[in-house]
Image 1 (cartoon, helix red, strand yellow):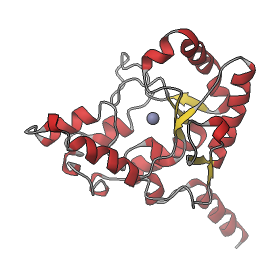
Image 2 (tube, protein in one colour; image 1 turned 45 degrees about the horizontal axis):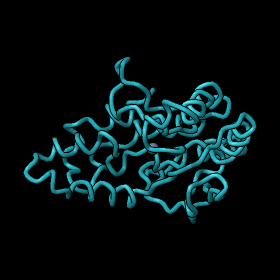
Image 3 (cartoon, protein in one colour; image 1 turned 60 degrees about the vertical axis):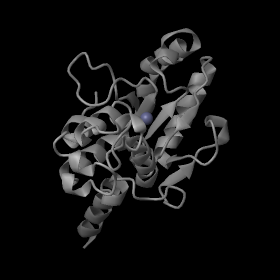
Length: 222
Ligand SMILES: [Zn+2]
């Protein structure tokens, strides 16, 4: 009985619901999430998993002591939020007459299909500016260099790196950082349990399998 309980606790602590993996949750009411302090963010009302946020706070302090200012500009995004972004882009006039597959490929240059974003997990964040150029000169470069040297000490990693070495999926995003101690097991579970049949309820959902969104994009990280 005791072993069974220990096993149950172990399973509970290392598995997520499909709703959690696909962002079909409200981080404001989920017990594993916490609101990000305004001190660390560009606006109020953003959330992360508590463990990821605590690690971020330590990284923020260390970065501050080294003269850098980290600012979270996007954190957890729900399926519903991602669907609004996705469907909004889908309806753009520039896509009039485009085949669905080509539309989806173009949108996925920088936006995830609903149900496939790491932002659903509460482990990932965008920092400071949504442009690689910000991180390539001046204080942005100094901050980026610091992150490359130290983020790993706090569990954080840039997952959308240069594609020169054959990484598939999204283009490089120097602003997107992921808390790997939680995101790695979440990705493993996602790849085991989420299928193309689970990806529905948004415009062009039928393209996900032909575009191999799970194998090329969700799995396409450094
Ligand atoms: Zn991001």
